Length: 142
Image 1 (cartoon, rainbow, N blue to C red):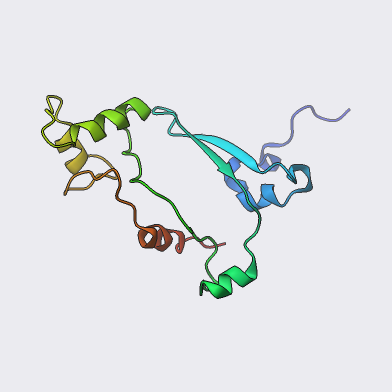
Image 2: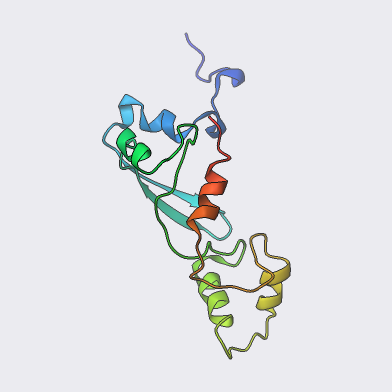
């Protein structure tokens, strides 16, 4: 009779997989929507729709080097502040940074000095730079 539990060294962890492993697997073909929760304390829910592999013509037309594994073609809005309290906390933080708003909890100072992805200059919720995003994506190596 076979063991009910696999040997520990044969158990794969989530870090053993890439999205490509899953996306290219026959079992998941046609299932192009993925959702995941980031930061279980703040519970940021993300939905991703895989549109397919990039057409090589697009890469050439846009002069995207072959060595880049991932490229962002569009987006908007500042990344949510880490550990701000999820959706309600993020909305509150953005509201505090509006002109003339009171800040009795000291959220502006927290964001500028202690927040992991804060900015000493303050918060512009509409700030988003495709070049910054792609610089970070360029660090991804297969």
